[in-house]
Image (cartoon, rainbow, N blue to C red; front, side):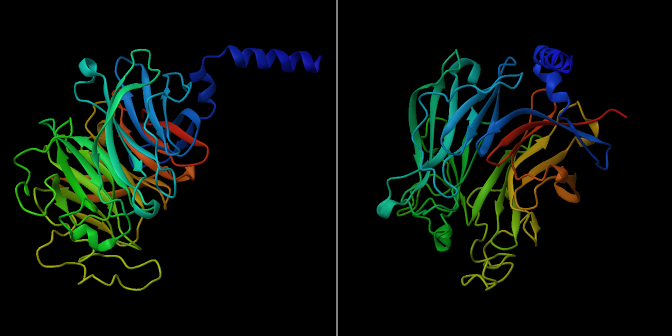
Length: 384
């Protein structure tokens, strides 16, 4: 009789829609605006790095750092790895990184990927960006073409940066880490430690700040960045915002402006992991550089960022959300204009490294945990 009842219960569970099964896994967390529910949408992801939303409720595209791009269906099913994805250099912090849909995706079906690419001298790697067309059956990418390469390749496994964002005018911005080679962030003949601005097909706009200057890479929009792993268009001002890892201390948020120097390694609030000063640093500020818009003296290890402008959760409107790897939290920032006036730490009970956060078309937040068994969560405020 016991066996029969157990089998019956298993059959009932098997017949439940996946969302109902996941409901049992919902986790509740406190916040200043009320309780929050984190619902697991997909589990079993291998160090997922970024998520993008397919239109017409077709689900999500998720990158896994070892080199796989997957579709997650609305009910949480994981596809087989998509075909046509470039070979990646999956060592250290390298691998398949950001994913972004074209602003005209419904017409051109273009998917942009950033990733670590090998082939450098002495086996070193750098960041590359390319795009391919997503098949209508979501099985793979075709005609994938590299549109940007970080040259020279200097990374032995660290600081690839690698977030992507389009601005209102359709220009593509890309963050590029300094490959843990500090001084290169100030070298304008290299793409290490830079934010670049290109057309959607990789061409360089004529009005980029350093176009026509001898010995300077024309793609560069700003420089003096360390390891920028967050990038987003501010929907209210149209400005591009970036966040980056400091060394030991000194994680930053910057509002990216044309041709500006953001200081690394001449100016930093951090020190080496060995507790020694950064050799090149002149202090927390340096002449000719832009001070951070916001800085954490103790590094949460920030990654991913999303401005919230949906109608679903009024209490979150005009807030900025950032993932944190070391502190294993979702950071909520509140504004007065562009000035950050309040910070709250959320979802600490997940006890997981939060790599990416995005606002979904349904008005929920979606976060990815960077773990061996990574999870895509839907996060929302509960009604009063």
